Length: 105
Image (tube, rainbow, N blue to C red; front, side, top):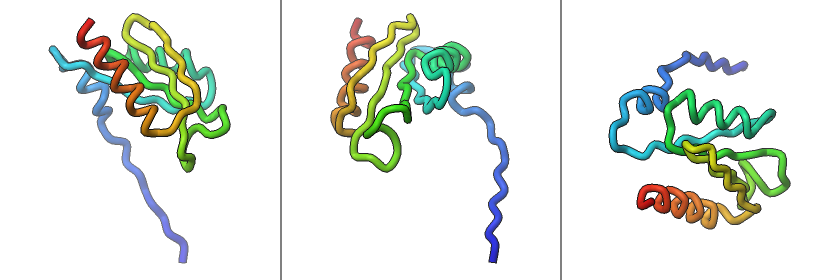
């Protein structure tokens, strides 16, 4: 009883939104496994994002299956702000604060 799941490539929704956005502040998320910072910056620029939140699996207590996470927030000016490992609620608050500070800048 093998189960097989066939996946079909879909349209890149984030890229489509980035190409069409006008006054929206568009934030993407990236889980990178190598060349993390450079790959996240490339994705930020290629998809016309205002910011990207990079997740890393390199640190203990970060990523899936954990109650904590560690992020790096990168804005369209390529300003990088790395955060320590925190609870996921604290991470969400940090992301929100970074977005709000840039919208009201």
